[in-house]
Each structure stands twice: as structure tokens, then as C-alpha cells.
Length: 143
Image (cartoon, rainbow, N blue to C red; front, side, top):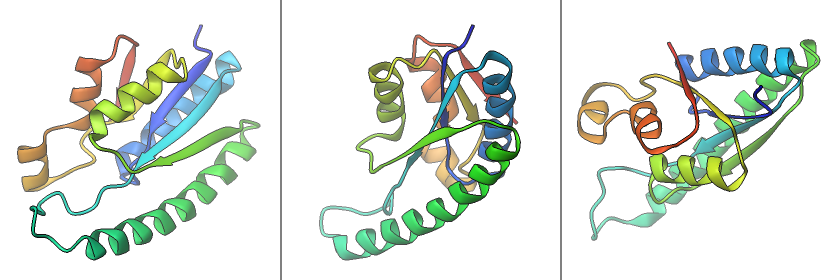
């Protein structure tokens, strides 16, 4: 049924839950799974902001993401499942996830709910909600 599953992964507990749900689906349907992580700099910067701080933040995020992906790889291997991973620096997280899913012909998106919290969530909105609104593919939101 589902052959190509995309899991947007932001290191949150809910994205780990989404990974585990996708792992079960991947195993059941003998599908392919891709984890996509979008790294963002400071969402609050303005045109006079020093971009060197963003570069350092993205470097730290990339290192943390790779460590998490290694742990997920071990879980996947225990379940006899493999996955690909991709790290992007997006212009728009929601649009880039939707574009990635479309360009790679994913037929299911499994995403965690509410990776962002507090004021970020209120102002920037829910990525899971945005992806589910903008994609034509089925979206499973894991809590």
C-alpha cells in the first residue's frame, strides 16, 4: 500500500514517535523510508542580523541531528529496516517538506505533532498542520 514513506524529523519526542510508527508501517508493507530534517537558524532575526550566529547554530543542529540519526539507525537495524536520511536548510520548512515529498514521490508522510513549543508555535504555526494542509499525499500525525 505505502511504498515510499517520508518522516520529517526535528529531534522532538513526537518526531521520534512518528519514526517508530513509520518503522512499523515500513516493516509491514516492505516500504522505503526517508527521514528529512530541516535545520533552521534563528527565526527571529532581521535584515541587520549577523548571519555568522546562524551558521554556528546550524552547525550544532547538524551535529545533534547526526547523533540522533545514528541512534535511530540502530533501532531500525534491530527491526530489519533501513532508511535514508536527508538534511536540508529550508527557505520554508513546510513548503520544503511538501516539495521534497512530491519530488521523491513519497506516498505517505508520517510526522510528529507540535515539535515547536510556546511562543514559536503560536507565531510560526504547526509544521504538521501546514504539511497536512499543503500536500496531496496522506499525512499521519503522531502524538
